[in-house]
Image: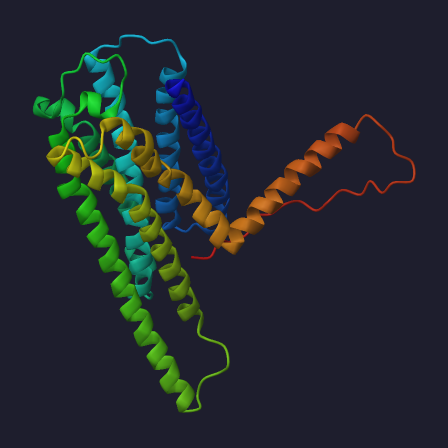
Length: 326
């Protein structure tokens, strides 16, 4: 019964992750095609990595819902390596998005010269290479593998606790500190901009509206702040309890960590697209217009074979791609 409940939760979570990230990816592709912004490829890569998390979790959900089987140890290690690699790619993509927003604020006049197509492509290739190394580290180093006769493919059944300690020290904490540094530096730059604006207003040279770059700075800071908060709340409990479990196995049983805290970490892949759809007004408008376009096509298809006297059959205007603001 517990296995069936966990499988149902994993299935629902994976389905929501895939659907949400596919929708946001469609909006981003529409905007990239229209504006040609290279920085949005980092956000698009984030949606792809999160969707990959959903697909890998769906495989685990099918195991929970199916009949108990006895997969080989190598199969379990490879499956969990793919799950870990996708999660690592999602976290690294968050870092690239934060770095991109930081660069746009730090050097706004040189941003488009620095963020070029080849550099973006090289960054994304390097990201997936690092994510693959992190996920498949137990395959490369057998010392990180754990021999288990348990039939279920799960994180702690195939990976040694020392692997968790390694990822905690070399992966999670450096990422969190980098997030905090980027946000503090952007906050410092924004405060300098605000001070300059106040000086101009006191001199009587400024208008009533803030400069566009200041509004863009505040939007970028808000986005990075939300990314930091969701990333910390999602993954911090899992990593802390995993490390504590190495010292005190009775404090946090493996089932509690895997069934609750690990699911909370996976939920970060669902929060990422929701942040853009809830906080970015242009994304909301684009999604609503995409929904209106689908509804219009369905109504036209349903009404194509029937005649409605006295009703206006004028076609609705075509849906266009709106530009997304940073």
